[in-house]
View 1 (cartoon, rainbow, N blue to C red):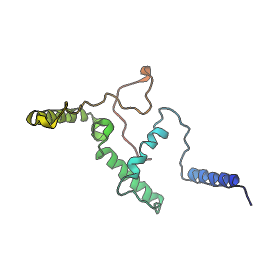
View 2: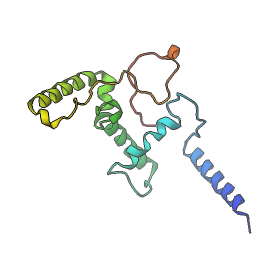
View 3: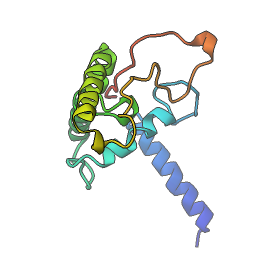
View 4: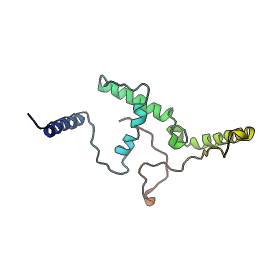
Amino acid sequence: MPSRRLFEELRGATLESRLEELGVLRSFSRPRVSNDNPYSESLFRPVKYRPDYSRKPFASKDQACQWVAAFVDWYNHQHRSSWIKFEMPIQRHNGDAIEVCRQRAVVYEEARQHHPRRWSRSTRCWCQPAEVWINQLPDELNEPGPLPLVQAA
């Protein structure tokens, strides 16, 4: 009877081989690489908690690709991220989020003026963060620019 360790190695090798067949590259945990662990793992929760996420394996690679394409469209154009003050990534990418947040701050302040007892402190800060990072570059390498959108593989 084969040892448990040998069985686990065979099972692991089979999985690695299968992933290579599907074109899945293994992670080397490189910093600031957009297709590596932190970026990929940050999407696990939004993916798994989508109501249309299949609890069963996809019937085909094409079906999986169609679902991912629909997810990416939803994530970029409908999903409101708490990291960027509940704006959609496309708004942040296009530079529209600053004006939306400015208008939101005005509405909150007007509501506070009309109903001061509803607020024990000041209203929420609606300022957009200047930068959003998973792995921040050293200062000399930072270059301002739009945030990248999630892209389907």
